[in-house]
Length: 125
Image (cartoon, rainbow, N blue to C red):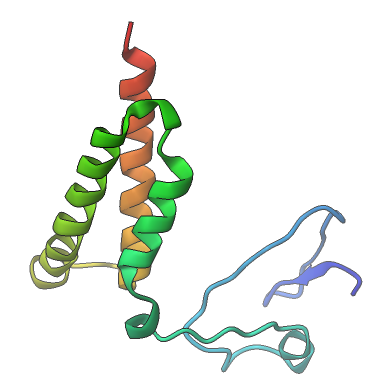
């Protein structure tokens, strides 16, 4: 592969050899044959994977070890119990200019929560 990103307007961007990109898309109806030939497709229906798996993985990777087991359990319980309701609220009560999927909302929630958690930990004397 020549590691060149070809944009719809004809512009070509040469990518560095250490760059890896991951795109999540609903379909590839507008992709060129060259793009399709380079795809590595993994299809995971949302119902199969679910958002809870993402939360549990995120917690396992991003929660500091020194936070204490009781706090970890509380954080796990908080996210697992509140996230489905929060997503339901977004779907019922909010208008999205750019439609999202539950998995993306979950990832964004985890990222925001992580940044707040880091600030809280850094602010401790």
